[in-house]
Image 1 (cartoon, rainbow, N blue to C red):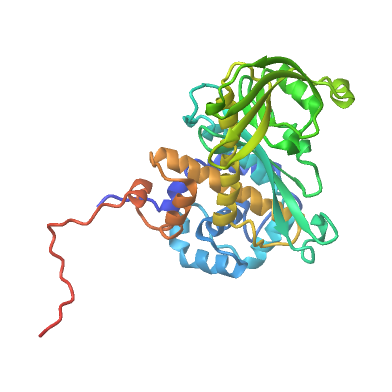
Image 2: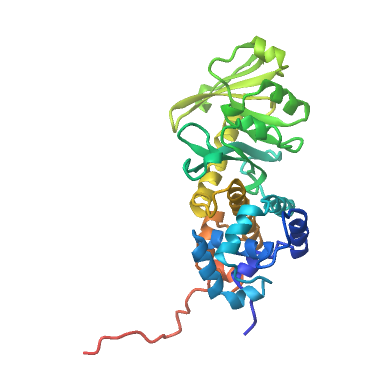
Length: 383
């Protein structure tokens, strides 16, 4: 019988140990670690994310139970006190850097969105990760709420978050959104929370297209009005120039206004874009497909541990979130390597109960069907 590493070991294959140790050396605080290493911390936290473990005591117990299988990963069980101390004190920047290293490999994963155009398509959005105000006072957003904000630029072709940032909950979505350096020629869909006419000009100058919704109180002049077919759902297709003093001062570029009525929802929306060649229906379809980023946020909040935290400091929270995002990348990469049509959420559910099984990921995802010719003994009722 051939030997196989555990599914957990195979999941961690893209993480290069020498890269990890280099990052650990760069992002270190205080004295030399003795009782546990950053690698032990990483293995324990990754296991907790995939297995759904939600307490330090459970992490320690599970790692102790799998001590022999951890040996091949170069890790040891870590005491809950040591894990809590590392989460609290050692910089979360290590895992942000590790996420970047893995992302550089995953970005080469082939993928294709559902539209005919070849431009890379992204959705940009931010979501609040809620925290208890009593336990996390440093994350106070209002008098009665606390949270941190996760900003994401999701590639629709690979469903991989190619741009990720964490910020305080009271920070505007635009602050991190403007920092994302989308590739030239790409199309970015975002909601009205990202209205910034100066940014629109910067995107246009870089050769980046965008699709968003037009504000109801926007002031504009119509430069050209094109004929439309109402049966297609398109009610208007116009070239416009935003003409308010605010827009003119910030150099708003010439844009296109598309009004579309969706027969499924019976809603009419006004879209704004700087792409003048795609059909009006495609513009509406791009914004509708922005729903992919909402599904991404739903998936990570349902399947990864970013609701219950193992530490109360800012560093501990950021550590756990960056490791959760790393798990998402690892599973997304395994999904491609196994040539599986499954979603990342479905793979996480299967891996959760097969984490330390000595089977290939392909066998875990595609178990062999039972042999119909094999007569297995069954319990029979004796008369």
